[in-house]
Amino acid sequence: MTGPTAVSETLYTSLADQLPGFISSALLQCKRLPTLPAVALNVLKISRGADATLSDYANAIEHDPALTARVMSVANSVHYLRAAQPPHTCFDATQRMGLDVTLATVLSFCLFEKDHTARARLQFWQRALTAAVAASYLAQQLCPHQSGSVFTTALLQDIGILALQTAYPADAELLYGTEYTSHPHIMQVEKRYFGCDHALVSAWLLAKWGAHDELVQAVLHSHDGFETADNAALCLNVSGSIADAWLSANPAQALAGVIRQLNALTPSNEWAISGLLAHLEHTLPPLMDTLNLSTPAVVNSVALLQEAQQLLFEHTLSLSARLDAQQQARETLLHDYAELEQRSRIDSLTQLANRAWLEQQLRERFHLCLTTKRTMSVVFIDLDHFKVLNDRYGHQAGDQVLAHFGRMLASLIRVGDLAGRYGGEEFLVILPDEDAEGARRFAERITRRLQERPMARVDQEPLYVSVSIGVACLTDGGFGDERELIDAADQSMYFIKRSGRGGVSVYGH
Ligand SMILES: Nc1nc2c(ncn2[C@@H]2O[C@H](COP(=O)(O)OP(=O)(O)OP(=O)(O)O)[C@@H](O)[C@H]2O)c(=O)[nH]1
Image (cartoon, rainbow, N blue to C red; front, side, top):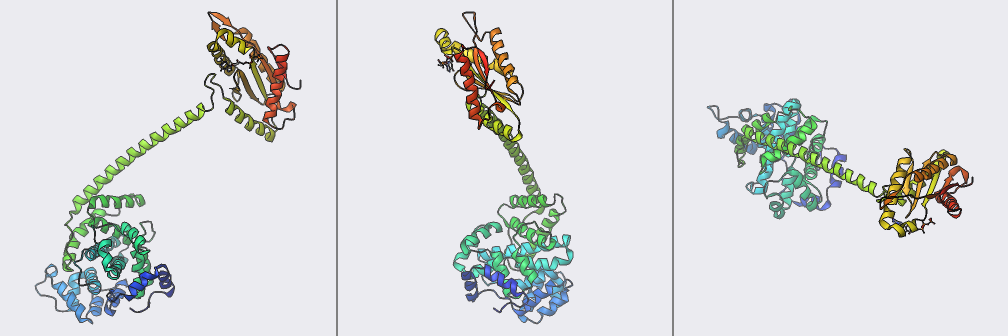
């Protein structure tokens, strides 16, 4: 093989750098590696020209007797024998076959190994031709002036597979000869096996043959997906997926996948998939036949599209059902989580905040007051002689009192206040933005309410309780943290306990 000519050195070097060393040496040492003779290179060059005519091709081919013979015999085959007279010249032959078939014939002649019946090789050619025909059809819709070059690029995009098959014949059937597999999957396997995929090998090989930068780049990125602003690249990349679908064991399923990807890009029918499929249906069998390739099972393009669309519809339905189910599960989860979180903050007997939540809230609010220069008060409440009550009336009556007291406390606080059970028969209320006097009034309301209302009934008899309350206001103490504020309220509460119970004391007042 000769070194790069038309391709830029930078591109060739960068490809060579990316290719694992053992692969390039295996390819370079491979005697049977398909190389392009000068005529084929010339034909490739012509195909890149925007205004290439059949006579340009004919002029290039007629210099090579073997190629001319090949082209004439293909043109002479049953399919192209429409005219009464067999073709006499290379020009006659190319005219009968048209540009695409001429090019495919030339390239297949140059690149074909004798043993193309091997399954792996056969699949390669079927895919290359299907992609090429699909690509040029799409290009005629999207970028007509590039349809010739898009055809060539599609035809050559997987040439790396042929090279890898030639360099590693023992592995070829294993890697490429199983049931037709889509190229994204093949590429994954190649990366694991060779450390690179065939797109890179194809690009390197074409660069080595001196193909043009544009062709090399297009081949390198031919498997990169559909997100590209370049119409020619889009036609090329879509053509590979269409070929995969066309040749797959389950074409409708695979085609539905391609349509889904296309719809995500442009949710319109501008792709004219039905036209493309009809084109493949009518063009491929005679073309494969011409090139002595066995044709895959004949596909009815209308039925195929209908089945693919039905699958797509079912997929959309099941997707939206799955989304609904997921959404519902998410809402249930969020609801459960919120409920769980709420429960983890609540004391089950009194339905007030529990101690952990009280302490966390007090910590946060304490710091908020310091940073925003606001105040707050805490009210520490301890039920009097609760032990005696328990002993005399039973633990259940004690529980009733606690629960009732909790409800009463909840009815007395305002929005933004937080009341909670601090310990057994101890309660704490946080009053944001409340000064000591306001907090005292709140505490006295509690003691009054307890004088008015019994907290339980034992044998129909009302059971009244009293409480000792200590109040502490943030502004009154120079407190370092929330603990010191609670301690101050607790001390005031103990002052009441010591003075006989049933009353309110305010820290520092
Ligand atoms: N029924 C009931 N009793 C509780 C609960 N938690 C704590 N207690 C009781 O509350 C009583 C508190 O007793 P002490 O700390 O001596 O206080 P006290 O009897 O109220 O006396 P003073 O506070 O000095 O008025 C103990 O007997 C605890 O068992 C509870 O959830 N339910």
